[in-house]
Length: 582
Image (tube, rainbow, N blue to C red; front, side, top):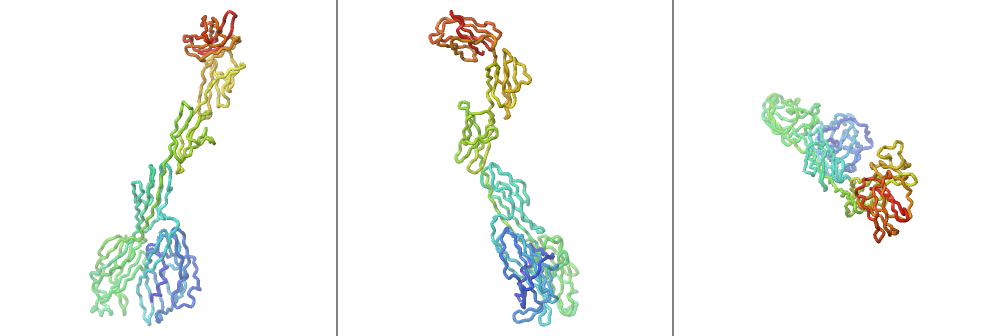
């Protein structure tokens, strides 16, 4: 008779919960044509692959008359009570609301859709509990049977099907968001995270995890899905009413008890075989799944009779199943039952999170060489920018400061990690030039403000200024990259003297602080030195003999800051003039 039931292993449930809704599938009525035993089409299903969606339409042929081992049997009813062991993520939806089939009433063909995305590869034993009603030699028989059948899920490309992770690698530091993917609800589900950074969690969606030091971290998640099973029921005493009918000769014989378990919808979950002629009994190794889809289950104790109707000896309700042993008493029947918590499925996945070091990007400025540099490292690239624009040929760790602006260097190491140096701001040096009655500074800057004798000149906002007369001049500029620079004050004297010279004079340092040197190869005799202030007043008058090399040293430390004109005279008159700043 085993061939009669083998087709049933495709009526899957997910962790004990039957999927009973209708589908749009249509049975293939060529399936099993002419056969005298149940046929499943296709006979062999392609293997599922972990992490990949799977779907298959299954057609089932149920003849009302079957031949098994030379015996003709009428198949009146087949009821799928429960099935466990389905790979997580897969479901089967059949086109029968109550999973009950009546071949003698025309339920010859039916179909189901097997679909879902299995999450873990391997072989799975699927256990099926069925109740079968057959008619053999004119006698109706009802019995339960359990079958086990394996299904294979092949390994897929993805190594992790248990959780998502926002990133598996990063530079410098990482903040990761992690979410578990497996939820066995309504079955109890436990999570155990180990983030590899010294932190663990039992939450389905843990807090954001921070990784601040370079290195490799093993992130793992163990997901455990539990189920409650009615494992054993002990009858200490049985209601005397069960023995007061014809089958027990009105008390001369003891009852023949058996159990019926109903779910919260009143549907039969399981029916045991009967134990003949006993006053107490133990039903062991029941392994009846109490799906958490329901808050309560009803356990009924019946007396099996042949000549009369079966007698209800008592019943009790299991509310909100939990592991442990509890007592019951009803209508004279007493005893206890034991519920165990079993691991239904367990999943383990692990991923490596890598945190790579950032390159060094500490900038140094050399006053001596007027350069910027960052540390030189092996297998490292450098890219300099000026005011945010790439300097195409500047890809060494050092750059010369050729132009004003904001300098920055992007450093990239062998791991592809990049770091930006701090910014270095180089402001332009301002030097006011005076030529042809025009004062000027560098052009192309953002703004200009000119000052004459300490007062701002309105509407003078370009890089050039017409000569305003003898006096002190300065300019203040701004740049688009954040510089604000004010020039040194210069004094311009253009109307006191015409600076005609018979000899070429070299006057230095200019500006001068203490000692002014006046040199010319034509200075070879005693010379009268006059120094005039901006308003034409003589502030120094000395007669000096030049050195053999034509050099005159003049002490000007007592002069006030400003612009001065120097005049040199000998017996031939004025021989040279020059300007200097103090």
